[in-house]
Amino acid sequence: MAMMLDESEASDAELIGRAKGGDRGAFGTLLERHYDFVYRTAYRWCGRKADAEDIAQEVCVRLGKAIRDYRGGGSFTTWLYSVTMNAARDMMRKTARETVKTEAYGVHALISGEAAAESEDPVEALWAAVRQLPDKQRDAVLLVYGEGLSHAVTAEAMAISEATVSWHIHEAKKRLKTLMRSAGEV
Image (cartoon, rainbow, N blue to C red):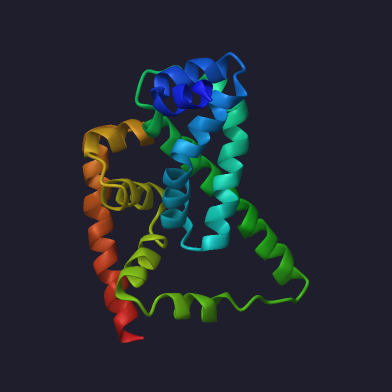
């Protein structure tokens, strides 16, 4: 029982160190501590509960191997954003490939009806528009506005300069105005 108390009170750095050494309990505690964060980030990125769950599960699997490579130069959550966004992008590419295959065989999914039903909420409509942005703009908006990160931390997570984050945000705002206007006219 004392071991569980120690793990729940341990810092991320302590848990990471122990997990790198093969301590499964420490790794499990680290996953439990950050799972909601990973899921929330994935959901904002993809906008679908089932996909967000798949991404979060994929991140958990990847972390089993990737934790050994974590250097600790930045915060753990900043590194975790990168792992989560990479998993989300991988899933998007896989989904795109599967969609092409499906369409090639003449079977068409009714995704547009589902997207329209989800976007009746103005907040969800905005996040749906964010998901239509180019990758870098979408990632910058998700991290700055979705997660409340500073431009500096977002720059670190995206491996770009702070000025570039600001530029992506600026461009995203212009594009979102256009997307939201056209959505309102439909």
